[in-house]
Image 1 (cartoon, chains in turn orange, cyan):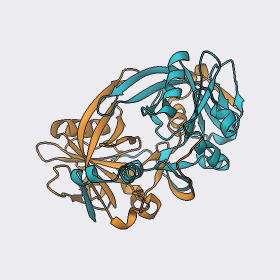
Image 2 (cartoon, chains in turn purple, brown):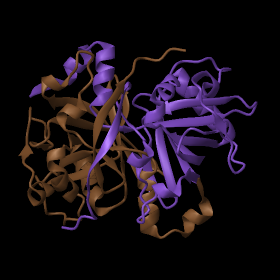
Image 3 (tube, rainbow over the protein chains, first blue to last red):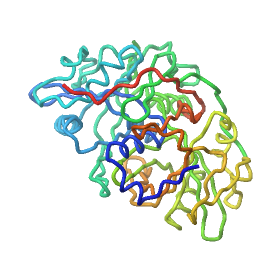
Length: 203
Length: 203
């Protein structure tokens, strides 16, 4: 086994280090976050950092880095208080990845990358029509991570839209059946294949 | 498409709701967090909430819920300042899942679930010998999420141990080759199969 210590990490080429630490933490979720500002300009960006915060009430979090792409999402959701989370499926990986490009503020990634905006149940933020699992969230709180100026954004799920057939009797959603993908690092997309479903563990 | 609103979420059976919202956010990473307290009692627990916070310096975060299992991890890492992150591979899913059981404070999940403690480079927290990708972290900061009293723990990666063959020329780690799994919800383990590796996206 190779040992990589902090000194050698600091000396690494920056792209090599970015790829190493974006992959080494394990597989990630793949979601498109949809927002709109008060002037009606929509934005769509792919995020691989969505985490479960709680189920009752349902809270999800995601990490925002101080990049142009992610700042548009942040500005819009702070301005309106709402955003959508839409699963990335195998059928539109290329288009979803393209939303990570640094488009100008006045360009909507919905149009630029070929997604259809969908407005459901008078929720103000745009959903992705092509996505089979979509959530409408209300901004709840944010935490500035002092170490590197990233932000944890926490939101409450107030709407969920998905095909009922994807929900098992126990409430769990069949992500494989939906064609939802996982991400390794920043560039690799994978299809998870079921291995084992276990039960609540007891000592 | 079925619409689930906040009112129907609130009325759900609590297990059904927990399964729904633990799965609906997408696929998650699978890591065993190893800790030790000052008396030398070790602890090991599975976490599905590790997220990338930054690469330079390398920071990772994870979410702690106020449960018995996770509290032991939290108490130990706050006491010593150090913890390890060890990938869960296909070959030991059952044992890794078993660490989520509520063992008493004086029971080490290393012994109870059949893992070997490994101490590397004088790092105080125990690594999992069976894991092919392991990280040594130093506690950096924590954020209390007011909405539901969960905690975001942020740590700095100061050691990485893995087979050099798993690292590609661009720095990315081949998690599929390592046999690392992904998790859906709380109980389902899956093997991600590569679909596409894309490139840095430009408008």
